[in-house]
Every structure is written in structure tokens, then in C-alpha cells.
Image 1 (cartoon, rainbow, N blue to C red):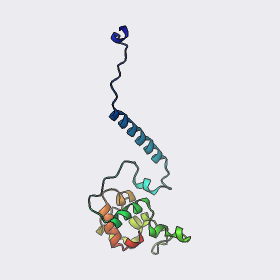
Image 2 (spheres, one colour):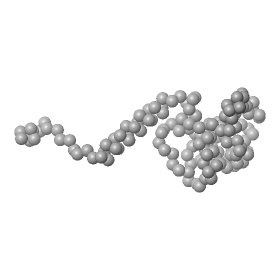
Image 3 (cartoon, rainbow, N blue to C red):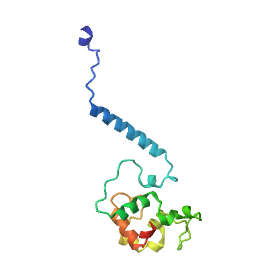
Image 4 (cartoon, rainbow, N blue to C red):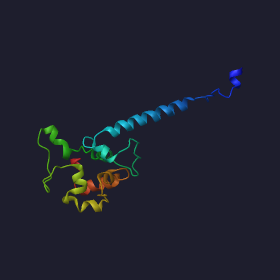
Length: 153
């Protein structure tokens, strides 16, 4: 009885199931984010455009199934045009215009072949993150169609 009335007695509030779930989710998210940050940008193209593990919002426009497949392929930098050489056991593809390695970054930001299509599709060329990040889905699809690359993604 004396301990209950003592000012030194610690009172713990009731911990609910929701409190435990929230704490676990927060801890797991933190661990996941820390692991994500340890990834090398050179080996992880998605990390270059998505520095945090938080879910991207759904696209503001309705996309076809084919378009829904194209967007993640472009974001991770693994497309038919840039990576089919692996299955064929060939050399890495080179840009026919620039004679440099053909990458999603090169197609979206650098190659002069697509200089006319980029502004028409509202592609932001300041960085790949801005060009293919969230909210850019319709612009990405329009650019791929204008550049006549639909079957190569």
C-alpha cells in the first residue's frame, strides 16, 4: 500500500494492440529505410530516383496494362532495349546516334534523337528522378509513344 502512494512509483499506461502494431510498423519501416540507404546507387537504379521507401502515390491517370508494366521497367532501368543483350549473350547496346551505352538515363535525358519528343511530352530533363518520378506517368507514356519505343520497353 505504501508503494502505491509513493511519488517514486512509475505508472505505465495501458498499451493497446494498435500501439504495438504501430510501434512494430515504425521500427520495420526504419530498418527497411536504413537497409535501402546502404544500397549503392550504381547497382540500384531505382534508388537513384526513389531515395525513400515510402509508397509512391497511384498515378493520377488511368493506364493500360501495358503502360503499367512500362513505368516500373523504366524506373528500375531494365527495359528490352537496354537489357535484352543479356539473354542473347551479346555486348551492351550502344546508341546509334551518340555511340555511348544505351540506358534509360541516356534516352530520357541525353540523346539528341529524342530532343523533339521530350518537350512535347513535358519530360523534365533536370534529372532522371524528375523525368520518371511519381506524377509523371502520363508524360512518360507520351514520350515513349512519340519516341516510337513502345515495343522496346
